Amino acid sequence: MDASVSNSSHDETSTSTSAAVGAVHKVTPTPTKISSLQHLNNLLPNLSSTLQERIVHCPWKCHVSTALQSFVLYLPTVNLRMEHNPSFALACSLANAWHVPVIVLAVVGCQTRSGMSQLQQQKKERLDATVMTARRLAFTMEALQECCSLWSNHGAAVFVRVHGNSSSRAMEHLSLAVKASAVVLDEAFVRPYSSLVEQVEGACRNASRVCYRVDGSTTVPPCSILKRCVDSESGKYVYSGIPDRAWKWNKMTQGGRERHLDAALCSEFDAPTLLCPVNVSSRKSLFEANLLHRYLPSSWVMDTDEVVSKPLLCSDLNEIPCFKKWAVNFCGDDKDSPHPCKHTTGNYSSGMSRWSQWLDRGGLKDYARTRNDPKKPHSPSRMSCYLNLGIVSIFRLISDMDKIGEADKNHCSGIEKYKEEILKWREYSYAHTLCRNDYDKISCLPGWARRYLSSNKAEYCIYDYTINEMIGGCTGDDTWDAMQKYLVSTGELHNNVRMTWGKTVMHWGIAQSKDPAISLAELVYLNDRFALDGLSPPSYGGILWCYGWGDKPAKDGSISIKYASRYKCSATDFVTAEKILIEEASSRKFLDIRSMLLSRANGQRSVAVNKRRRHTSPISQRKERTLHNFFAKATR
Ligand SMILES: Cc1cc2nc3c(=O)[nH]c(=O)nc-3n(C[C@H](O)[C@H](O)[C@H](O)COP(=O)(O)OP(=O)(O)OC[C@H]3O[C@@H](n4cnc5c(N)ncnc54)[C@H](O)[C@@H]3O)c2cc1C
Image (cartoon, rainbow, N blue to C red; front, side, top):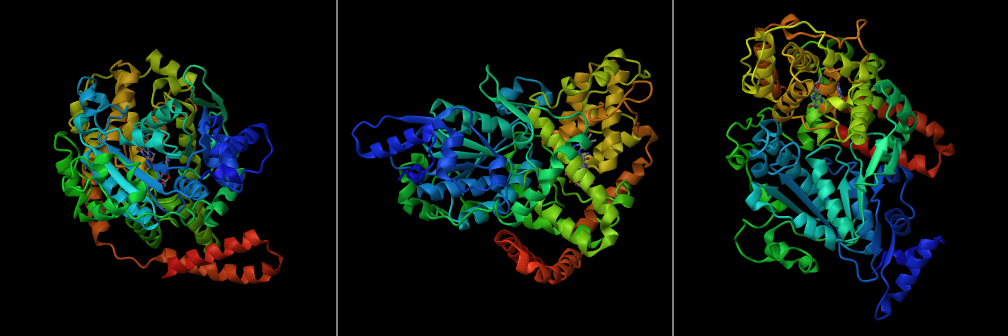
């Protein structure tokens, strides 16, 4: 079946598409190539504009097959959720247009930052070390266990491939990609996730297959705002037009934000019911899923007990009792791999529970006042690790805040400040990484900062720490060491501490007359390897900020200063804060104020809505229904 049959548009290319479709029964149909944008418009003419704005079409022309379609492949990387996942929504919409199933294959690799295998990495720099540590692997697998079940219950055929080392690296994602009718990828922004995306795109380009990247990470997708053109050398898209300050980006995107938030709440980023659901939740059902047999790698469908060469199914994931233990065994080769974080579980339920508890203890209300006190480790929301892998929906958090703000004006200052972080700074960093391939390098810094770093005007000291001394927190700077030990032990670093922790390394770099590129690389290494929320656009935005990015020079032209040795907390304070963090995280009971406030907001809204109802359009009525369902769920 070829859904381009349904195309009724009259442009030149679609005429040729129709001609090709009309030629289905001829002996030698002429292959037709059209742009992926036209392909999508032909297939899904009613796709909402907000979802369209999130989609980046591959820049090459693709074959429009006149044969039966096979399946749609979704390769998730940073949108590990069911709710408000525009990538999964697009994959399901395409599959429905062709009446074919969706295959989801999550590829989890023990990659290094640059996307190299462990073997390649051993020959290279230490600073490119493995970032899929036991800590991150456990967290990622916990997220996948939950969302894979949801994708599977929705009717997709779901597989998870975990790559241990180079010898077990199967390239099934590539062989599946070239057999798929279309491939959907998350817009991943940073390596190693974006390396996987580029690898798949390369395979699709060679086979003239269509693939789409979809942004599910930001409220207003930077791909819809920035200027885009195709680089003549690489054939890839390059973006430009990002302003030099976060506030300017915030201003540029503000206009579209409400539209995208409304779209999320109106379920425009939720997957439609699948017309061709399949059940491969267990090995037995996989064997019976004849429909997919001819497309899947033969080793996957062989009815043997040998699991080694097969990807994990939902049933396999559900049989793993503890991903934290499993991940430690899995990463056995990486002896120094940071241990999984006992106090953090990487799934949607745990993320939303953390969010509710934070609201419950007045976190949002008091955010403007208390967020900068590291002795209160629960004063910030600690949501970054969930946001960065797309485990919780950014739309959910923002809409919760808006509803709470409507219900209780005492939250206004907290909400304003929180939005400054989660929208202004966070989304600016996403735009930055989309624009720059060198997003974690000195070359991204403004001219004044680069000039300052190379002029070496800063005060000189005698420190010369090795990376191992820094990792272990053995530099002799007691406060910095305490910060580092806290990071290694908990996988977190308080928002306010992080700035001083990072700037101190920058100062050390200057003091040692080190090439600033090296001190920057060291900082990136420490952050990505130990922080659970590392390896994300805000990681590089935050680190570069320590070197002057997004900032203005001090009066003397220098980068603003923050020394750990002058920090407001002592080394002992960090030990106490760690205890509070771990103990409270495990013992806290909560009232779920989020539900209470949301239901209050709902009550207020329903009076207003009743007054308005007679004048509302069908779309706003649908929105109200969605909100109603959402609040009903929240208050259960
Ligand atoms: C040296 C350095 C390294 C950093 N590394 C990371 C990192 O690896 N991953 C990461 O997500 N953030 C990083 N940041 C940014 C910021 O420190 C963290 O986002 C924040 O501490 C996360 O904790 P939280 O969720 O409790 O934040 P909250 O204070 O509760 O803020 C809410 C959300 O807003 C966003 N946010 C807050 N501050 C920033 C910021 N400065 N830039 C961008 N987004 C922000 C985060 O998504 C965060 O979850 C870094 C900052 C610095 C200075």
